Each structure stands twice: as C-alpha cells, then as structure tokens.
Length: 178
Image 1 (cartoon, rainbow, N blue to C red):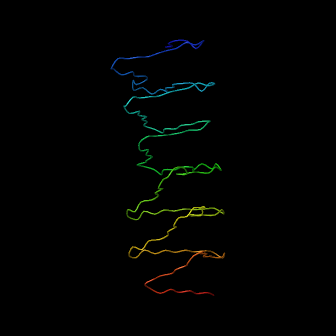
Image 2 (image 1 turned 180 degrees about the vertical axis):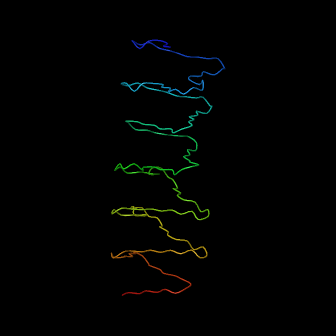
Image 3 (image 1 turned 180 degrees about the horizontal axis):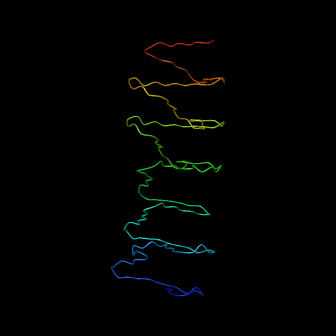
C-alpha cells in the first residue's frame, strides 16, 4: 500500500486527536524504515514533556557519516545490566576526550567492595596532573592497611620538587641499591 507519491514537494501528514498514532505495530516480523538517506534529507523525532522511548528486543545500532551529539539538560546515563560498557573500543586512531571543558569533577571507579580502576598506556606517556596550573596531585590512601606501590622498569625513577620533599612514616623508611 502506497500513500502519496515521491515527486515534487508532496507532503504527507498523519495526525490524531488524543489517541495514539501507530506504525507497523501489528506484531509481525517486518522491517520498518522511516526517513531517507538521500541528499539533505532530515528526520526529527520529538516529544513534549513526555518520554522519548527507543525500545528493542535486539541490538540498537546508530551510524552517522557526520558527527553525533547527545546533550541533556538533566542527568545523562549510559548503563548496561548484562555487558561491558565500551567507549572508543574500535581500532580507530583518534583521541577520546572526557570532561575537557567547564569546571567539573571527574569521578572514575567505585569505592564499593573489590572494585578497581585500571589505566593503561602504550609506548606514550601516562601523565597525571602535568598541565601548567597550580594544583595538588595526591596518590594513595592513608586508610588502615592500604598500600601504594610506585615502580619503574630498567629506566630511571626521578622525584623532582621545587619546594620541600617530605617523606613521613610511622614505620621504617628503607632505601636500597644494588
């Protein structure tokens, strides 16, 4: 069944009163396509103060040949109850920026149970707090039996302080060399 035509500036409007407008909701297996990928075609999905819901019993996939922007005036959550959340996992050599503008506190990880945070680097640097602003860089915890280990391979380990360098412990300070 075809409604309308595909020539000229033909418009097609579907309206309803307070009832619903349903498209392809008969419970049959079929593909439903809305919109066109030709030229400068546009597609808008909108709601008033209600919720815009995208539901799928399978995979939800989005593809854009341009930029994709997701903005929210409220909280923005990305969760998974049954799999890993991956950001930037494709083998594409582009940077990943997180919280790079505005005044923000970036929190990573959870203090619950045996949660851990792993930060890996290839042959490039792993830089923590090396930008040219005055701030304190803290590493480690002073809670009960917590431990901090700083290691290097066969390369040098260098500690540089333009001010005082203080090492304070309730236990032993041991410096060894071979």
